Amino acid sequence: MTSIWKNNRAALIIVALTVVILGGIIQTMEPKVWVSIMLSGATLASLYFLVASGLSLIFGLMDVLNFAHGVLFVLGAYVGLSTFLNPRLLFNTLPIFFVLIASIMMSQHLGRAFWSRITDTRTRRIATVVLLAAAVGLVLLALRGFPMRALNAFNITAVGGLVTTANAQDPLALMLRRLLLLALGGVPLGLLLSPAERPEEVSLRPVWQTALIAGTSALIGILLLVWRDSGEVWMLALSPDVRFILALIMGTVAGALGGVAIETGLIRPFYGNPVTQLVLTLGLSIAGIDLIEAMWGEEANPPMPTPSLFNESCRSDSIIGWFSEHCQSVDVVGRAFPTYRLFIILVGVLVFIGVGLMLRRTRLGMIIRAGVQDSEMVQALGINVRRVFTMVFALGSALAAMGGVIAAPYLGVFPAMGSIFQLQAFIAVVIGGMGSFIGAAVGTVILGMARAFGDHFVAAGIDLPFLDTVIKGSPAIARASTVLIMAIVLLVKPSGIFGKKE
Image (cartoon, rainbow, N blue to C red; front, top):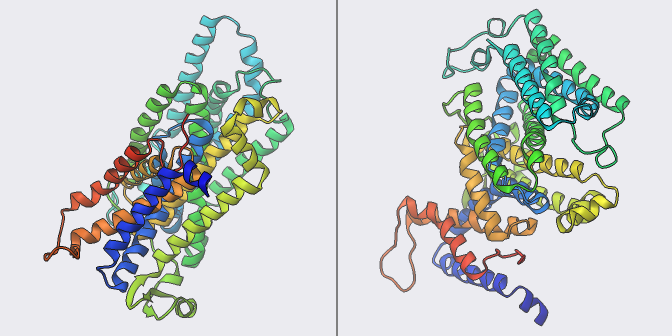
């Protein structure tokens, strides 16, 4: 007991003070009020955690602060919304990515043979510039005139108005020409992204495995393009529950692929150079939102429809009753609380348990934890640390994108939603301790509760027992409460609640 107190004195003091303050505030409220506020705080905490957990994993293993993490949150929300309401956009854009990825994968095997023949530094620089110019030129030529806004005009507020699918999408022959140009553009990209290390340092997959994966990817892309009309009709005929599951899967996969692209294209060439990584990811956070606005528009979209499990206009007396009634709300201590928010809380808890078990009980988790301590030793044991880095980046990005899909029915979908959640996630990670997964969870709970009670404080005020009047605050106080908590925690323990001194 003494050792626990010595090792975690600051953390225990912070937790005790939080409990005392929260208990004092709750004592002045009716049970139905503070329970509702705490559930609202838990809802926000779950969404914060889906972003903060990925940030914590990436920083803990790779020492990378990814300022583009919020873009992945927004990407997941928009991809999920398109999957649910506008599948024609996916059927016309996914083939582009599948074919491009297949071309890049195959040409990476040519990269080592190509670069091994160029030994002069000046010649390598010239070759890099030429390859980059060729890749950019071919990709831009392939996507020139692509009808993105027409494909996205699936509601009355979209730019260009409502456009039928036949008029919105390119003819099949034109799309096949675009794919051919993209396949050619992927060759110089693959050469640029090929590993610079010797084969004994970083090995690639056998050629036949890469060919199989790349061929399957290209085939899927072409089939999606050929079946785009019938595929759109089939998806829109599915039940809202199935489409929601598909939206969740597609949004999460899009985030994972986006994370792989960021790690391989921007982060990997600059390991050991944190300033460059920060500048690149910060620039990507701006350019990424601009790209999303160019694809989906700047206007805010209404909330994505919820599954039928949460759609009935009624109020269940209990959770057990909700399983048969599928009401929009459930009675919690005499007050209605939306059942979809309970679903968000459940997702956050399940992700915490699942990732925690993965880190503690699986071989991958053991490698990740070992890599956090000494990545060079893990590499010396014959483990491809680079591949582990990519997997962790993909996992963290997928969690953020999944959070965007989960938040879409709750908050709506708009480009600025990523920056809001990214800021809160960074604050939560700092509060909990950089690189600590448990710390990220604790930090998000603290922030979620602080924001929920802060909003209540602004709306209804707080009746403190030693004052005769109700104290109310401005909305700025609620927004600033999270920053204030971070400042207090850092004053008590600069490394965060569960952080460790270097």
